[in-house]
Image (tube, rainbow, N blue to C red; front, side, top):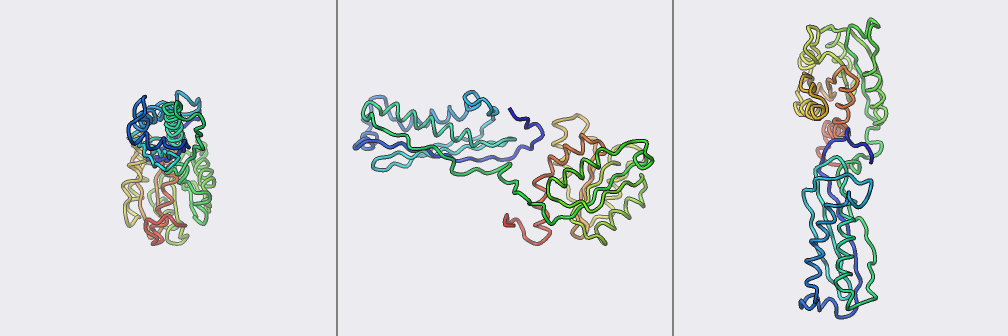
Length: 306
């Protein structure tokens, strides 16, 4: 199984379809309730729900999922039964295999219940009609054209007593998101230096994004959040809330981060922890959702068009 522990739970939806071609008169027999084994459509509906819930027990690399909804619908033609299965879950991985499994088992159940009347029935195909959520929303190159800076804050890092692994990791992750890192800089725990850097990046550099690393804990010189709040025009409370919530599921110390996020003109400034692990988990929570904010800043509203 793939490791999905770093992923964020989001609403996942998948719709799958299966088709069963049947002989003359069988659709009429179903509608008249003349099938000895019972109503194949109702039995197949139950089978589809059960199959979707048991997908991980059938297909080895599928994760067990807490499904929130499994819906089964039918479209009846003169010689065919179309099965449409919709599956929803709020989780870290998609539900397309659950929808496909449900549709497949529904088709097999119908075949089993009708085979006494028609030995030439054909299950014509099982296919995915649509899926939403997760990776399908992570459009390739979505960060192209965005410009960023990584500001690492800490006296020990500037003096060389401590190696900066978090800042380099942040820069690497931004590059992987197709966001250009125009500056990577290390500065001491100094209020004026932090404020000047943040203001320069926004006002003179006109950057889209500034990510800071360090100075968010309880130390006497940890005042990155206060400086950030003093230079931004508007606070974005949801971002640090999401970062702490995501991190708290992985470490009992995430709640101790005092990081802030805000907007100065059209530059988004976000405080990340100074630890590599904490910063990495924060980035897991930030992307790809953060990219949507730049469309809003450009006046494109909530449109998904690029």
